[in-house]
Image: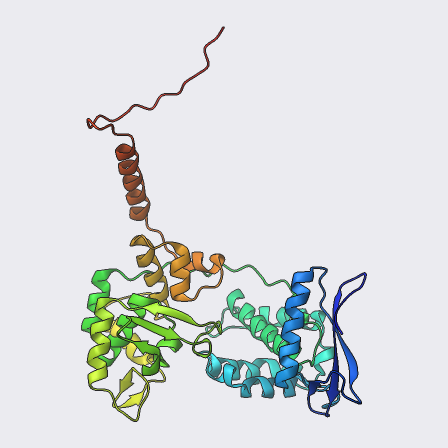
Length: 378
């Protein structure tokens, strides 16, 4: 029991009991059977980590019985997926429901998930490429990639629940897309936007502008996550898109804003941002209307993340700290949110020149000349 090394990989083995619904850890128990999981890696450290994860899931009763039901239909998978609490709290949940019902179920609904191949998914993508979009044009590459990303997440969920061993979408190469946005709201534009926004929207805008938090994280924020004394928002894993807890520091403006909101909060309502005493589920209409009145073009609420990241970088905050604040998991994604203007590059050159000048000054204030010492010829 434990780790076993074979030629092709490490394997994790545990004695388990199968009650027809779930597998449970059962070492030394009569009737227990040895169950083996392939780690698919020759790295012992990774194998040890996988062993710990499987053992934990067995102890929590999270590993489903292989005899729970026969072949799992794609329709059954989507029903389980969309009913999961961690999926239902996502900001894109309504979009996922529409996509599953309108796009994926008509194609894959009656198929057994084990029978769905990369070839079928490629065929689905090929048909989507020639379909007319909303305005009569072809469907955008980014839209099709979002379809495939949802499909991939569905199959990953099936793997986690033990219904599937391999994700067929992982064999499909996504089309390259150029969808990086570069829209950053200037301070003057932000002031104009605030002027044309309602007080409730102003508070939400300020939170997004100065923290870079996602829309869902802001609208779902509750007072038990706000620590005004410490000047922090303490998001738990279930509050974030990435399922990772993080701390978000509060600026002086945000602290003052939250203190005012706290004074007039409703005791029966745990959410921070309210309209008429009720939590806010959507701000799209109000936000778009405020942008029109303020004559701000090409700016979406999500662009506040670009703006916050760019402003933090301009303030001299290192990129790793910014990633911790905003919740970006990879540097590649972070770079897409970090916008550079020509003035930023000129300012960087000016600051570097100043540093070099000061670094090479002697105590008398004279700037040293750079000289290249070439070897003298014999």
